[in-house]
Image 1: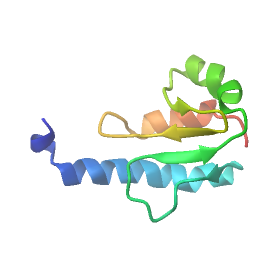
Image 2: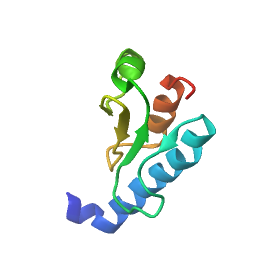
Image 3: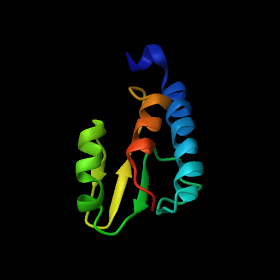
Length: 95
């Protein structure tokens, strides 16, 4: 399945989703922890009490992200699309 799609295409897709998040999250008051030059398919974001602040909102929106004590992490990939990113952003309170 991965070979049929192609690793490079999967990486381009994920980076496109991450680019949208990298642009939108700071506008909403969130500080990115992942360096801008990182090519990894994940984005870590600082948020004090992230579990408490985002837990219920993400659950209600049916968005699965990694929640830590003071950060959250998104890792979009081939199974995600811009609709998923928009759903996450709609559920996200202002930072």
